[in-house]
Image 1 (cartoon, one colour):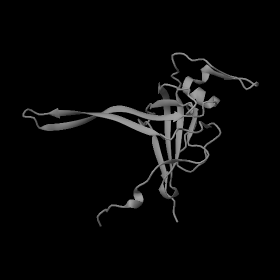
Image 2 (tube, one colour):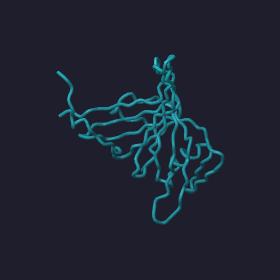
Image 3 (cartoon, rainbow, N blue to C red):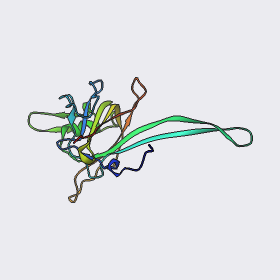
Image 4 (cartoon, rainbow, N blue to C red):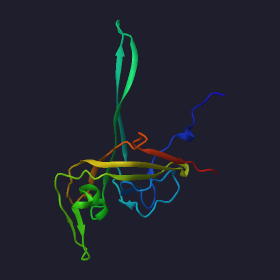
Length: 188
């Protein structure tokens, strides 16, 4: 029997209620499915802008041509795997540590937060993104190792939330994978 188009497989990604973006120290045990609760080591980064999450997987190819012009070999080169989002909980210590590096953010018992802004941080961490898809299906994206490699302009205006537009660039793990995607389909 041949495969056919199926509109039930078309979906959109919404953030999981209660938190959709998490960060943990590099080396923290990784989740391996879409449904097991995250441990307390994973810190929620709160709300993100309505631009959502973008995943870019930049690969390039080299084509080898034979004399006469025929393509005889197509080689895929490694590329970069990036995740871009805007964190909008600008008063969150965890967000500030993500953006500027854990060593550049301190907080005290008087509710004072100090951020030392410098050339940036190469701090690597584990990131987890949790989504709800069509029909209540769950999707969890696990990035074993990534760091903030780009920070967009931060605007302070009275008509919009302060947001930190960041790009995370993933590093391949010992298996050669930059991230994992786990999907749990709801059954009726």
